[in-house]
Length: 604
Image 1 (cartoon, helix red, strand yellow):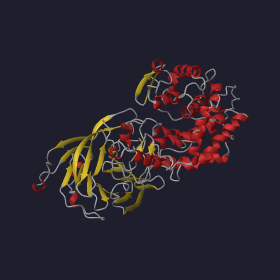
Image 2 (cartoon, helix red, strand yellow):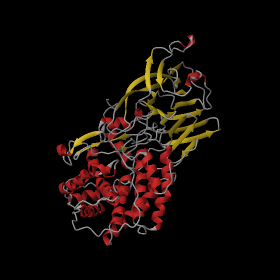
Image 3 (tube, helix red, strand yellow):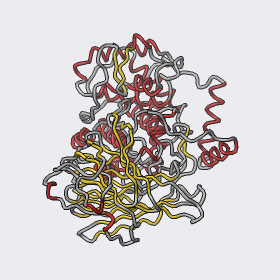
Image 4 (cartoon, helix red, strand yellow):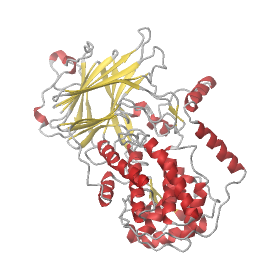
């Protein structure tokens, strides 16, 4: 669908946006970007094609790893990002193919995917072909640091799983490790630098001798800093994407697995640092998943990129970290990440009350502050719209924008100034968080300042009140009385939640004539006896609701009910992207505030 983009910016506005983007960068990011550009212009580094060091004897047990979906559908055919292509048609680096698809082609994830043993002949031929077709550093994508890191990791895991190396494969691994050592992505940092370091650690463990010791030393010195930097005290990966967090869990489990295959090589302090982080990381991952077992959609997040959470649980169990994580009912507040999980009766909700990401690395941030997702009876009901693509086009901008999330937008603007595919200028800062849990109901209130850059300095405050029969969501906008704003609350619904518009509420009393009604086909246990509740009559501890007629979204019998007071409801077309390359056409509920606050009630 077409992106709802702002009007073209003038030069001054563009300069302001650029300044608010780059001012958060760390000095090392700027320095390393200049350094890498100079080396590339001078033709450095040169590939080092010397034979590989000796392999280290693996005297410990290497356990079965986590498995992704199979991506090879034929000897030269691949499905990445829900798009199937043939190597014979496109080669290794077709500029007409999206860069992320080409990156995946060079990862070799299928070596460790589900049912990999049945594709062994394909794998061996593909490895040999890659070595033959991609001499360093001829092809840009093949030798980019991130695909190189992923390939080193997958090749080493494949060999340690008991596969005999393809002729030339071990020597190629050494060439790749030497290249990577001089191409570390310190200018990007974040998960890229982490995976670079992980690959060097695995190469340093896999080989032995002075060169391997240097790789191990370089990789582990980076990880000592980045584990503390990127894994927050509450266990969250600091980019605050459930998808990237799942990838980080896999990274830590891989490090633990390869280290145990070579006992005594990794220093005890480093082995312990890895092991100590696994438990809180697994707990956070479990909390950021819905009852259906898959990740929620905050920031850049989609299903099918990382191994599934159940695969990661099984991998952790094989490594001795225990079985699936059991989560408590009630409130779980991840203070450092800025997310809250509420489990109450039949409902599970995840609330975003934190920053969009680290200030110097908001590349995977969305403008989704104070958004939420909700599952009822194990099924997703309210969602954010997911991530279906990367790049710099208008659809990428739309998917990162506020209106693509279940939160409130003011004047059609984004709460954080996301732009350029992976950039963010001024970003929302949450404040005033308050959590009350009295055992019968749970109340969470939070505000953010993302719209203060607009005329009148508006501030959005959202309150969620959960009880045994539903959740009340109150949105309020505080701003100068001299300025009028158009505030719109968006409620995105999972694709299996059916919507049916009607012209009038069939349950409305004569005094409520004209009230809107929309049917929500969300099956719920014993929902036929839910009492009708008027949100305009609901008391609120912070403020009285506006004096306005209520609008209602009403279910068929056996469903949940959404109703609102102080807003005009409509249904608008939208798209849902649970996976990269996957588009599901649907409609979202749009509530246009009639004054400066509204109350929405979802009953079940």
